[in-house]
Length: 439
Image (cartoon, rainbow, N blue to C red; front, side, top):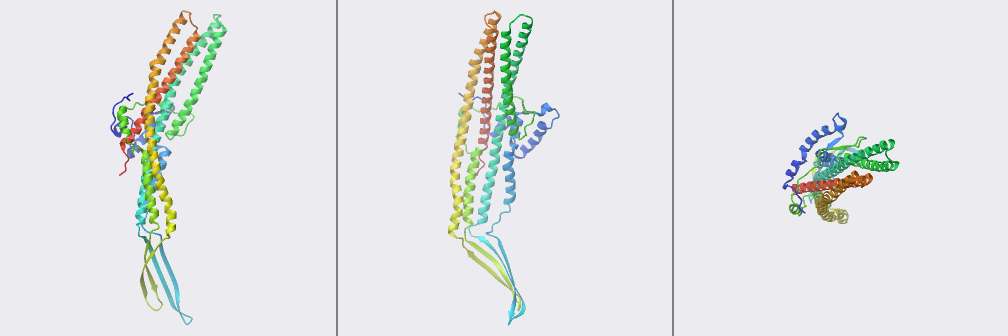
């Protein structure tokens, strides 16, 4: 089955349909969006959120701001990284010149030294810090994608339940009218108690189903609130606007794009984690390199002026100690390669599952709308004629309508699954088109 839709060769084209601005533009966009959603005086309007707003707000949740704030703090601190090995040593040695037990004058020695790594420890530290900041940058992007996906999924879930609730509410009103007509007929002596009792049972069961659905709606609204970084309220969020309809390329082109997943944010994070781990291994090794000590010493004698000396030394770390601590970093680097491979497999699996879900859900929609619903509607029409002719009971007709209602609910859920699969693929393909951002 081909996946219908226009081609989207770049992420920019994807973003034109459902905005996902980057960097400074993202902040400007959210400044414009948040007042629209949360500062309206109309209470009902304030509880509504569109799909575009949901995925835009999804990028500003704590899950995204956490690594972003960490990155900003690291950038500030990493600028202070120096290139020395160990601290600066300053030594003062005051004393006195004693001749035959008498203090003949004040003596002073002052020494200052600084160690310098012969393996460029400062450069290794800066390289490791730069690699770690790269991981944080990629983590911000990965978290933003996951937050957008979560917000999109929760919005679609709630919108689907809302559509089902509208159909069920219409069915409840129909049964309420039937019960009222039966009660009037019984009061007028034109009916019996059994049909009225049966109608009341059906109405009670449908009201129970509606209450169950209301619970599901509230839970979905709560999850949507969390996904956009908002505390759930007594008046839950409601979706506004139509379901999203992102355009996708045909399945052959989708599969062609799936061959290169190196730009997937989760995979980029793991690849940069591997790079950072190897940089930390180099840093750990450089910490135990020979250290050249340079400095100066000044000596003041009570019998004369100051005398200045140069200080030069070379120190060596214990080799066993070096291997003891650097082995941790080397082990982390070795394990990071396996984590990268695992992430690559997960990305492929996620894309395959999204393609399968789209195809499978579309087939479910075709069966329900092409076979199940037409057959049930024909059955309802047939029973309506039979009831009019006195050849069937009204309760047989009601049972058929209930089956039609159930099929309609399944159709809405299947449509929601199709929409989610499209959005899922759409956002993933957009990130693949951006690339990995690595040199």
